[in-house]
Image (cartoon, rainbow, N blue to C red; front, side, top):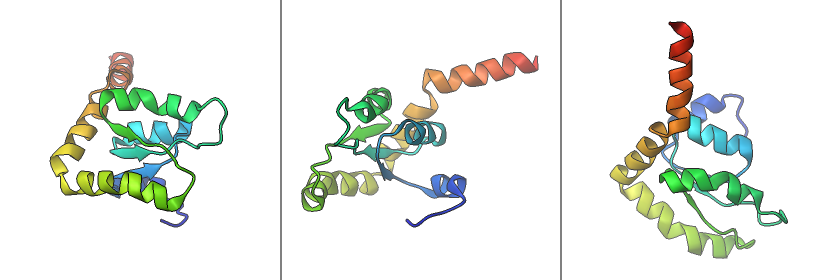
Length: 117
């Protein structure tokens, strides 16, 4: 996917995302409930992108994969996962639901509703 000025449309159309694990990307995945395969940037010394993605992995909304720093190895590693997820709508639906039902999402909605009362 090339550059776009309309990320909302891109996220809205996505069945699956393959991304890094930066904080903004993880937030966009969570708020848009897009099933994703996360390849944390392998050159960060503290591996913070993995840490960013772990809460969504624990919910069941994303899969964290290792970036082998070589395209061929990455394709061998995540290729079967991509095929599996794209072939099974039910799995992607369950991943979306896991993020949709996450306490953090519901908490924000609860706070907004309380403010409107």
